[in-house]
Amino acid sequence: MTKEQIAKMIDHAILHPTQGKEALIAECKIAEKYNVASVCVKPYAVNDAVSLLKHTNVMVGTVIGFPHGNSSIDIKVAEAEQACKHGAVEIDMVINNGKVTDGDYKYILNEIGSINSVVKDHGGIVKVIFETAYLSDEQIIILCDICSKAGVAFVKTSTGFGFISDSSGNMKAMGATLHHIDLMRKNSAHTVSVKASGGIKSISDIEKLYALGATRFGTSSTVNILEGLNSNADY
Image (cartoon, rainbow, N blue to C red; front, side):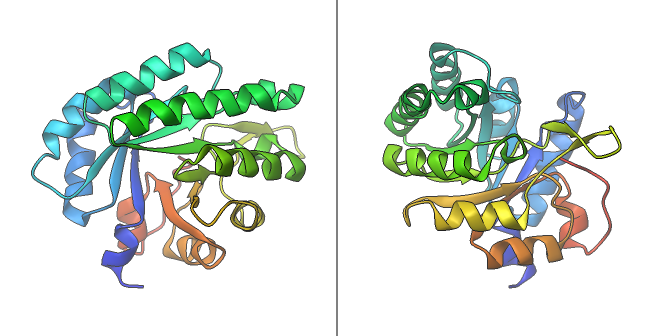
């Protein structure tokens, strides 16, 4: 793949909690320079991002229920509708993983379907974030089936802010893994694409994940990836 082709599979993330207006402007300039697929911004920043990128081919997306997915369905739907009205065309929603733990998949289907419906009404698409580090393979397979039935555009690995404890007791953000991408691709309908997100720092990372079926990549390391540099960013 060429650098330009890789860039058009990147959702440039502008999601760090401390990033404000100055960072948004700078990061949107990066997105424009490299002609990425989209920027993924915090919900309040959608209006500004749309304005900053209105003369480009870069789409504007945002996150819903981010980063832990614990808002009620009504709030998530309202948040998604407002984002669409402000100009977002791609909506990355975080599912309620507590309901997955409970085995309440009827709730999950209702949640995903409700958000997907309102976003489609506005001409947008939905990417469903699982936070795969919290889930078993069986749960991921069930969620892929639900997303296929709901007719969403993408299933997505993670937020980049889903922290788990490693073997030493240290908290670490877990992102996309080769195993999870392979599992999600094999268990999703052909109409559902796979987005890898979290810990993607190099072209090598992208190439390995792409080979297993991911076609969109969420990262804040866009410059380093496309210029072949090293990055320590996790989101």
